[in-house]
Image (cartoon, rainbow, N blue to C red; front, side):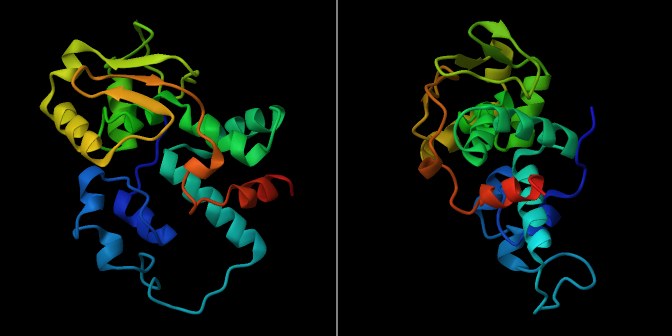
Length: 209
């Protein structure tokens, strides 16, 4: 399966903000954005460069793709689904992205990052309503019970991720029993509950061109 192999810290620096792609490192002073708050590359420190309207829209789309770890083709497919639903396309898009199994597993603390959670899903470490699902893009529905398999829950890395997530707290739209490695996806998140740093309206404008 195709995936983005660009170094995680360079992706954050390119977008100029933390995308939380490297688990606990993102919460320490070792974070590259904290140390070098400019774009990577030879000309990264040049200032005063202004993006066009199209450039701003493209940059926002790339940022959201990197946050959720999705390549262009799958992102377009998700956008098309969001556009076909009732309601605001931008909010629908974010809800669909948050409803992906790898993202739900990350929000529940099964992995320290979305990439780590995606790996756990691919390796048959996650069950949905008691059934093993190894497709990261699987759409979790409100009321679904998501849990770790016994073997995945026994891993030291998973245990550490669960402890770290429990200490930071969970989003309102999920309910988690960290000790059991189990949670419920209660509902799709509402827009005020999602990061204010994402401007989904720019993405809608980009695909409306």
